[in-house]
Image 1 (cartoon, rainbow, N blue to C red):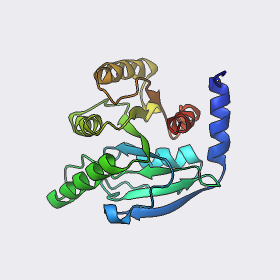
Image 2: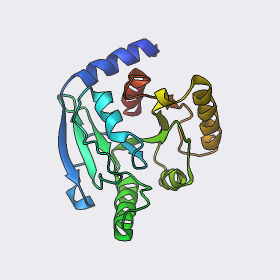
Image 3: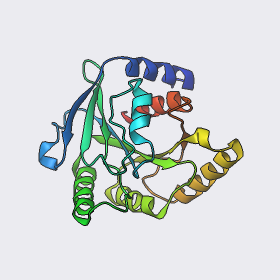
Amino acid sequence: MKQPDQQDRIETARRIFAGPIAFLKSAPALKFLPDADVPEVAFAGRSNVGKSSLINALTGRNALARTSNTPGRTQELNFFDVGTPLRFRLVDMPGYGYAKAPRDMLKQWRFLVNDYLRGRAVLKRVNVLIDSRHGIKEVDTGLLDMLDESAVSYRIILTKADKVKASELAAVTARTGEAIRKRPAAHPEIIATSSEKGMGLPELRAAVIDALD
C-alpha cells in the first residue's frame, strides 16, 4: 500500500486542525482526568518556553490555551477535543523548571505528570518543547528521563526558531539530535517552529496526526 507523501500528510492535518477544536477540562489531579476513550498527544516544556502560544498557533485559535507572562501559571493538565466526531485530544501539560515555585507545588507537579505519563494508555506521544536559543538544559533532562523510563514516545520541538540565526538554529538542532540519539523513547526527527512566523507548524500538525496511528 502506497504511503502518503509529505504534502498529502500536511494537507490532511491542515483540514483536521481547521475543524472543530474546543477546550474540554482542566485536571489538577488524576481523578479529574477525562475518560480515556480517544488517543491523546501532549505538549510539555519548561515554563515560558512558549507552549501555550504554540498550541494556539498550531490550532489557529488565538486564545484556546491560556498564555501568561508569569512563569509556572499552568499547574494543571488541560485537555482540548479535536475533530468531530471526536478524533483525538491535545493535552497542555504544566510547565516545569520555574525556580521560584513553592516546593509543594513542585512535588505536586511531579506526582501529577509522572502518574499521567505512566498510567495513560491512550497517550500516543509527548511533544517536548525546547527553546531554540538555549537547547536542552539540565532541567529538561529530568522529563526526558521520565519519558524514557515510562516508555512514552516523545519528539523534540524547538520553539522560537525565528529568534536565532539560521546557522545557530542548525547548530542547536544538531546538538539536540546528538543528545537524544541514544534515548530509547525519543523520535529522531526534530521540528523547529515559530508561533509568530508560522514556521514548522504544517509539519508539526502532520506529526501530531502521524502519532495517532
